[in-house]
Length: 168
Image 1: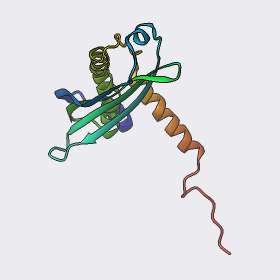
Image 2 (image 1 turned 135 degrees about the vertical axis):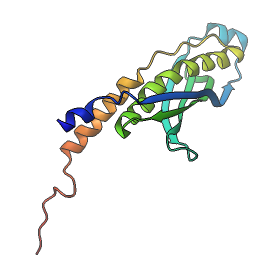
Image 3 (image 1 turned 180 degrees about the vertical axis):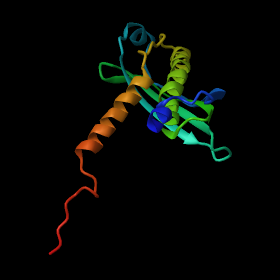
Image 4 (image 1 turned 45 degrees about the horizontal axis):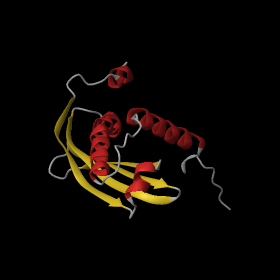
């Protein structure tokens, strides 16, 4: 009965958004002529990194940073490259550690992603290129898949305590 009660969400748990901001951004454009830009059908490469940093001033406050690196190439040549860190400061009160990780790595990343996409499109457009539309990413689903892979990997790999030992 106790395990059932602990599995239920805490009704008093609170997620507070303090702010969302661009932590850093950079735009690099290759030396391309105007006709090349107009006719280019670039191949877009998106690299995503998500990090959560607990803040030292408060045990409940976290800085969530979503880093996107987007590169556009045409015929193997670089057209442009953007690196952006979109961040948010969140306070989590009353969450279990597992639920807090899920909220920070799933829900908060989902909240930051549209801001990052809009900023990347703006930077590219200001660099003289067309609008960029990045495909949606479901960070909640990715986090669930990642946790499932971690748990299945740890279940298939015997721990040190479970390994047989022999004494000669």
